[in-house]
Length: 458
Figure: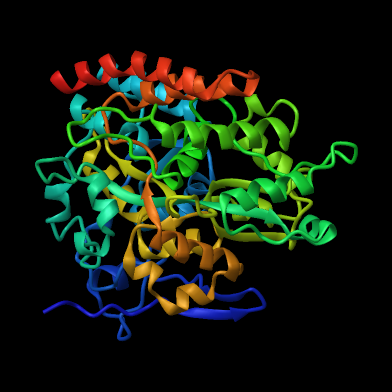
């Protein structure tokens, strides 16, 4: 018989329902004597028999990719230390540098970190093949390490697909799913009398109307930087009917769907985007949007916090959120994901697992969702009506829900995915200087194909 879980206490405020911050003693948490089954600050049930203080005094090092997920962890991690006595030092690094640093240290066999933020869409196959991650399966089966509400069935199918290897081992805990959505500036749309686009063709037409170079405003902004640009481009590729691989595992990103998607990408970033966009990653794109210089931006779903922060944004209260417009062959939101794992070389695996468990806990997941910083993989968080009430930006939440219905993996699940992003991304960036999309894509696929074949044979 499953144990019933009691939702966290909540308080009402102008911003909506929020999770109340209240202290619960360790004795109460461990013995389960609280009559109402109250939750601790971790969101874990009082009846859990987890020995939270088992590794008190341990120090953990955490390496994070810079963004809202890392911000959420760092903001509240003192609560984990209060619960466990474990000290946590964490560092946020821009994502591409973080990925490079992780590979270098894990390859050395002596990583400086005990917990690692994983970008599934880039690192899943690479980390699995190299054997860099510890298997969490035995930890999840141990009631002295795992609270009863943390079960595999609470994670979405996509999360489990990302986290498990082909042997069924849980090599990480799914943290946050990242759908791509369309952000738009309502004020600029109203000023120009432009309707929110429903299709990609309408989006290009709207961007042209919204562009006024003399005023320094542009219709669209997005990632133009090689490698980073692939996560934007695949939204167009999928909606033009593209598939990354055929039934035999051959790469398909030089076909007619890819060519037409690249033509659209080329038009958007050369005709209606800010100068210098070929060097933009998400940071530069967001800066242009938050300054009110760009009317539309397609990127990951987790950027509501900085957009709605008066200290960082000039478009507070003016931002619209909706799904990526439909293409001629369908409507999909390119989907990516993040997890949290433990290096196999770590000497503090069980202590690190307690931290990983806290990171994906209901309390932390609710905070992430309510801040607009990410979408937890756990169904019990997303489907909690009280948690939903605490989401300030209802339009953003609806874009999340709607994107989940049209989600599709945004990159091929192959070992050399980094090489794929580099090579095809370079081809796409080249088109921003006037290169022909068909020619560049063919060259890129000819270059990537033998790399993919070698990786699969190995």
